[in-house]
Image (cartoon, rainbow, N blue to C red; front, side, top):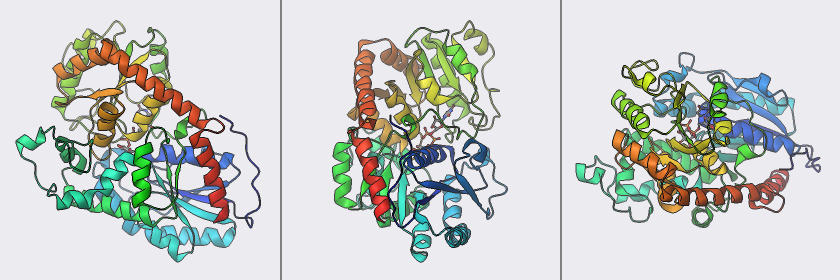
Length: 461
Ligand code: UDX
């Protein structure tokens, strides 16, 4: 990847971009990667951020950081933001005035502000941008496929899907008309248990994206070509598919938790493609019973595994307390290794990794694809069920734990993905996508060209 800094033509001197990330790990990572990409193209970057889960400015001396005064978020901690919906509501109501004030001050000091780039979940900031006559571009941290399923919420409502599901529907393999490849059994997870409120937020996010000047996606054309065509019909604003972001530069440090580097030295001791990596990202929580099923499924598989167990991610516990007596002994002798947080991109790129048991957050899914690692999918909420369905049924680069976190299913899936012929075929397909991901970033490739177009577009605003 050519990462030399470009000298921009003059666009009236407006070369400062203000980026507003959502204060969550899975959103900060791609936004800061995007900031690096745009900075390498000659733009100056200001990161407008909440103090709550602030990125560490010392890791980015080449950016300006502008903290927004936190309005009522002082008492939140990372383990306390389980209620995502409440957080998103809060940000999109109480933070608008401080964001407007910060932007207005910045625009007085620096007449060179070209546009505001916000996470799509900052949907209410369109009114702020309009009031300042500042163009707003949306950065959607997730992919097009899941966005389209969110955009279909009004259709789902008309079809009567916004209601509690019967036991039969919870297992139904039937496709949802108009939302294929989603199955009816994907919808409850997809809608979340607080469905009305969650759906309202999602609809606001979709409308806010439609009103934006343009949309930047962390995906690549070869992965979602059909979906891009559908998207362009319903959302005529320009779309720039310039991912995978994390492949432009060596990993930047936007991790909010310390990454345990012993993961890498432990992996160094293992043969190629032999280790299963297990991680459920930065937000997902599991119940004690699910955790125990995972523990036994992994132990019984006899396959080496590196397992990230984020402190506080097992409901009601601080860390490993629920592990059964004898479990750690059973996985001793190098077969299993547990850490609190790993350098995930480095882990997935390690030759010892042969599979990924994941919640299918979009960053994790794209990072896995970019390294050619087949997946075992156990999605929790939001975009994850759609990502998982695409991994298993469309791209065919993994399989979903159809009965949830249950030890026999986990054990047999590990065998299918890591040992059986079926897994070899999945690996071939995901390696093919890895190759496409590499090519799209090279000169003339789809993401490379789309990034050039994005730069021109911003300069024309
Ligand atoms: C959330 C949503 O869950 C996800 O569906 C949405 O697409 C983005 O926001 P999160 O749950 O954190 O994200 O998952 P994911 O998107 O996979 O992002 C996790 C990030 O943390 C990845 O970039 C991953 O590399 C990083 N990570 C994860 C680590 O650095 N170390 C770890 O041990 C685990």
